Length: 180
Length: 106
Image (cartoon, rainbow over all chains, first blue to last red; front, side, top):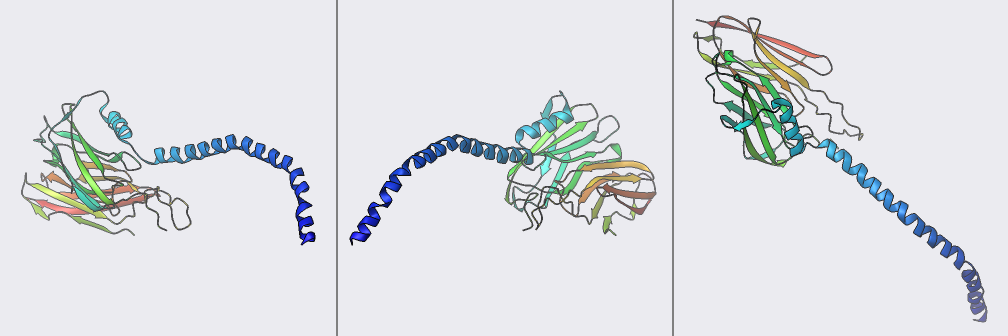
């Protein structure tokens, strides 16, 4: 019993003696607290930046639209997007874009551009067409990464721009899913 | 190498509006996905699809990675003259495929 007590007693001074280094290490911890925050902040910055870069945003879409239209006003008319409102698989979403136009030499659709809000890139496709088409209607299948708004802009022969849009709910996203 | 399916009517009346459909087998790899080794799979898409009627371009389309795999495109054309309709796909990794269809108008 005594031996054990003495054993207990003996380490105490050692422990007390080692308090200073402990305090020192605590202080060191306190010192590292700031860098750690900085590290966290750094990690956050690192994770946030690629996310922002890897996903188009409504702003990115607006910028991409601006690239096409320039400063011209875009009227919401004539363009119809035929796309299912609820999509189970975002990997292949049927999309039909049609623009009301006589498609004559004087009055036709020169181009149709389709944009999205939340895929990694705002562009979907740019199509060039003209009077030989007779009808401004294009059907294709697209990928959608998330529930979002799809916008189509048509450039008319008069130089005017008209647009149409559709909201889509996607349950299984496309584009960025991994194969693992 | 690649598998193409086009649907064009064999005959058409002059001035008739016909629907042209084209489907091509292609992975349309976006370049945003990572594979089993965790590495990003490099982008491999078709960048451009165009259709010519007797050499004159009637339709062209620039694809982005947001076009689904095995791209399908359908569009319209007014039948004016007999001849050949050519579909042309070009893309990453030197992808270049042409498909010709004959059409009789009259």
